[in-house]
Length: 340
Image (cartoon, rainbow, N blue to C red; front, side, top):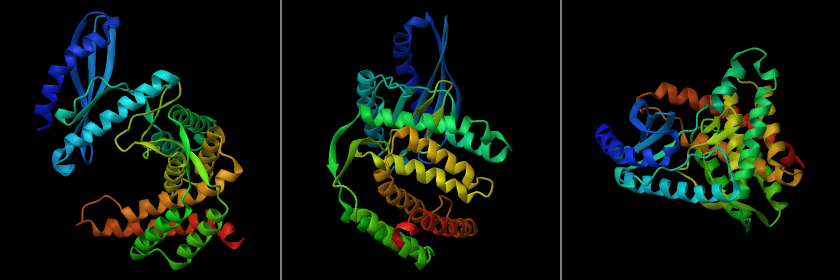
């Protein structure tokens, strides 16, 4: 099915590619050079050949049987997000964002040029596995670039600050804790999380910065390029929301890597500190970020590991590792506040 759709997309895409990259000279060919299956979509890597060089493109085709039969709507939403971001890019000259090459929603697809580079998570894993790699400054540099990019993105899409609803956040945390309790999260961790959060939110200012929110700003989705970083996953982007949600998601995703025995606290702390410094987080903002980060971590635990139902042993092992990790994260992030 995806291959048939891809053939249709290639046929429609060729004239667009020839026009969009006319500076490359005569258009020669458009070919598929690889593909990657994902949970709800396929990514096809394309190469456009010209007399004066090559251009890399990416085609994301959603799988209708994995999107609740709503693949066209999912693709349409992502294409709309790309159009929204493209407008901000033009105005603010934000680099590291893929350019849409047309609306292929009817084919359940999103087509863009491709940002070449390595996922940030691959760089982090390299630092964790190779002795001395984390000490050469490269991890700190990419973390700072990620913070600078996210800050620029939020500035390019900034909105008026939104009132902060601490009660709503507490309700959300309570529900997540209840969900995690059924997975085995201990009562001490739950008390520390909820008690620390109440103390923080009682002192939080009445409004927080608002902008477009990526919701998936994680090391897996951040691309490290020769010149900086880029981001390619706009499927779940919200055009307006609490900017700190993206910051918290990044911090939580980095911290969650500590559940791997080879990724230690020294590496994750270095990444988080440099990221926060370059983003420009104030001391007052840091407290509410601890709460939002814990919410993101609890969400990961509550969602569970994405494995087949038959793989019970893997699910149990993952839950046991996450329980211990959440306990440590709660003591580290919210216990001092709870004790105050």
